[in-house]
Amino acid sequence: MLLLGLYTRLIALVFVLQMIVAILTTKIGVYLGTSPLAPPPSPPQTGIWAVLHETRADYAQLLTCLFLVIEGAGRRSLDYLRQVG
Image (cartoon, rainbow, N blue to C red):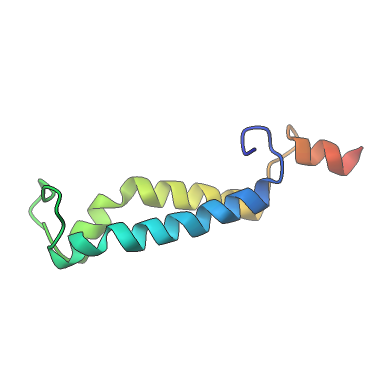
């Protein structure tokens, strides 16, 4: 639905909420140092800096979806065609 631009703001809002929950639930182990996965190769292996290092891709997805919530899909979308026509 995001690729076609149909109900973009609604779907992007769902993805924003999903990414927030994913970040909070999966990075708690990294923060506390109890993660069953291998520790990060960089020196801060626990704590806030390790969490920030490990969530780079998560933040990118979160901010991209937040942008779509704020701006919408644009002129080349089904949402725009529904609104105009």
